[in-house]
Each structure stands twice: as C-alpha cells, then as structure tokens.
Length: 83
Image 1 (cartoon, rainbow, N blue to C red):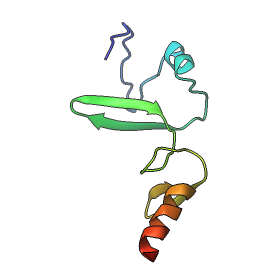
Image 2: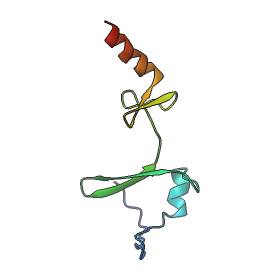
Image 3: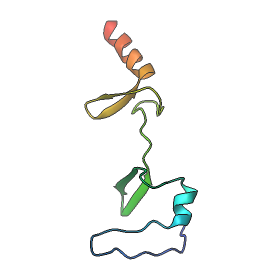
Image 4: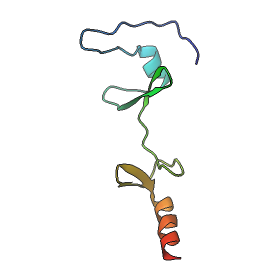
C-alpha cells in the first residue's frame, strides 16, 4: 500500500474525515455508501459496490440469505439442481 502523506485524527465520536483528494480519486460523493473492514492489521475503506458472490457482476442481482447472486449464476445453480 502506498503512503499518501495525509494524516487525520479520530474525533471524540470516533469519526475520521476522508480528504477530498482521496474522495475525488475514488469517485466517492456525499451520501455514497462505503464498506469498512479489517485486513490483517489495516482498516480498509472502499466505495461499496455490491456484486455477485460467484462471478463479481454488479447487474441483475438477487439477494439470498444476505448474499448477492446475479441472474446468470442463479440459473446455473437451478440447472445443477435439475440434473
């Protein structure tokens, strides 16, 4: 990961301001959803982009038990069940 030289303090409510330069670079606008997770010893913040758990497509998604599956993969699963 490349260091940017930008340092921010956590405020009293646990918030951090993401610098406008980074928001512009990642195309994050006001009210956009971001995903926050831990990877090893790092906190990762990225723009939320829902996608199929199998193929990664982000169109024609269906939700099943809190997971997203595209129509194409759903049809493939249905075909497996019919064999």
